[in-house]
Figure 1 (cartoon, rainbow, N blue to C red):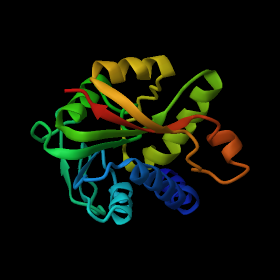
Figure 2: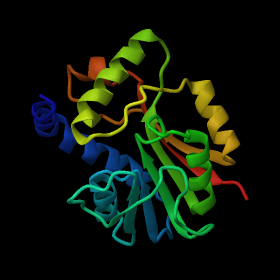
Figure 3: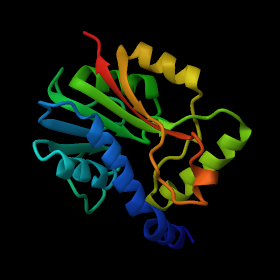
Length: 203
C-alpha cells in the first residue's frame, strides 16, 4: 500500500512541490553565494533545482537515510551534527526537516554554525487541531513510503521564534504563498500551513 501511495504522490504532487519550493528558495539565495548544503536532502531534487536557477551554486547534501539515487551528492550524517566546519558553506537549507529531527534546536544551531550567509528553512506552522490533522496526513503520504521517521511534531509560530532565537538566527525574508498545490486542493493543504524563510547567522 505504501508503494502505491508513494507513486500517486509523486505523480500528482512531487514535481510541482519541488518546482515551487526550489523557486522560493532560489529567490532567497544572496548574491555571492557559491555553496549550498541541503541538510536532510532526501532525493536532492530541491537543491538540484535551486542550483539550476542559481548556476553559481554548487549543491551537496547530508541525510540520515541516503537513497540509492539522488540528484546531488549526498552523504550520511547522524541527524544532529552537521559534518562541516564553521562557516564553511554559504547557504544551509532545511526543507521539511526540522519537524522530523530528534533534536530540532540542536540541528538548527548546527546549520547556523556552518552557514556563512544564510540558513533557509521550509517548514510548517501548526495553529490548531485541524492544522495538525492535515499536516499528519501530508507527512504520512509524502514520507512514509521512503521510510522517513515520522514524529508528527509540528511547531506553532511562537515555538519557531524561540527555536530561531536559540540558534542565533535573524530572519531577513519570508515567503508564505508558495503555491504548492493547485486549486481546489490548495484550500485544504495550503492555507498558511507552509513557509519558506531566510535567516542570517548572528556572529
